[in-house]
Length: 145
Image (cartoon, rainbow, N blue to C red):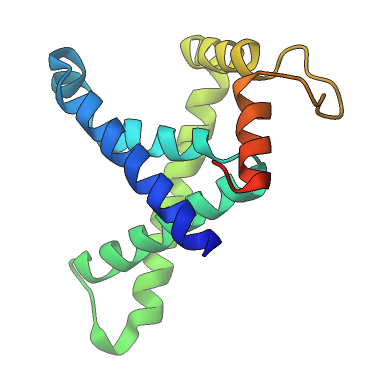
């Protein structure tokens, strides 16, 4: 039942995110829909492990869709196709890492997220903390998310 409830909550949040994006002329013209959806999903979860699961699910979908799309895809060598997709992905991630490590605008986004969500937190959550993360964490723990 917990999964059913979590899925219903996620579906409503996805719907709201899509509606918001599709009714904002500037955003719809400049930002692909998957960006706010992925951001919303990452923002909804309250721990690193859950973010890894979202990324893993995304990567699995990427491999399933990309492997058969390869020009030299061979039904007899699906493992080879998977390897080729991962090699390309590793190359892309390497380039992304290098670019983001020196991208000052990206650094500002991380700083902004830190200041908005994490600055001033203590090692342990304070019961009466009303920041978005602590509120979401408590809601998730009680099933009231």
